[in-house]
Length: 327
Image 1 (spheres, rainbow, N blue to C red):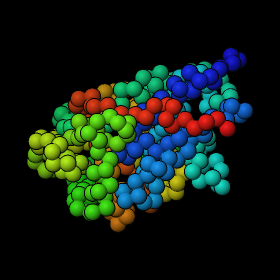
Image 2: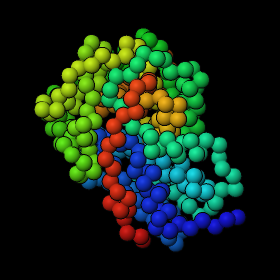
Image 3: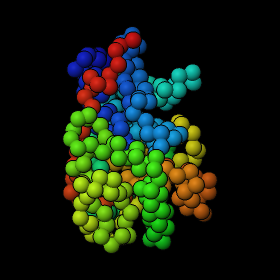
Image 4: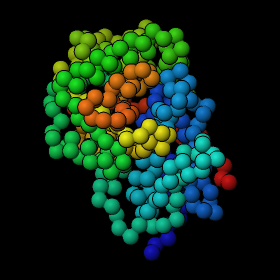
């Protein structure tokens, strides 16, 4: 079996892929540390970039880090490894979210690895209108399968349930823009430039729906100078609901892996996505997002899918800024 070198250049490639993952408010709440003696790359929480008002339990932080772990796994497979991923491997160290062992090469290249790896660099969150072109059923089936492969469930609600979820999102958005703590915190994460290389750049803020039926997050209202004219969004949005059987930190991490696997698979098919997270931020609204007849599932994310422009890249921290010194 061929031996692969885990040198500085290779480590930078792995971490570059990991940090391309989406994160709430582009907070990039992760650190990485390689133990060269064991070839284990530790993925740790960056508590200094937490959002206590929006994410008091750290659920969104876990999802964000889980998405980075998915990218790391894809990049490792692309480079020839058979990565072993362990989530929350040490109960005594709750900030150690994942450990990725890189000491075995893969005898075969898993199908789909290359297209997913390419999609890492093309995936961007979209805050602009989509067209009314429907996402084909076979593509939706692949997204459902991607979520299932990570131990989660992706539901595709019908029109009536979609309308109910959008009404919930509108209520959550109203609260988010009027609650002083959330409003202040969100304002603090909007950036006028690319320094620091995290947060949401003002140029990436999207418009509001002119007809008011799609409640996009109204970042623009937080910075009146950055306000954009309203636009007409799609009339029949395609939502997907990502759920888990349980609701523990490991489930949140698995949600992140599943979310990014779904987003990369969508990118492969030129399907764009935006994340409607507002409902998840209110403890009394999040349980209501579960479709009543489906049993005790826990809703983790609402995803809007469709066709439109590729989107605006958001800045990313350099690998050296998130790599801790070796142990």
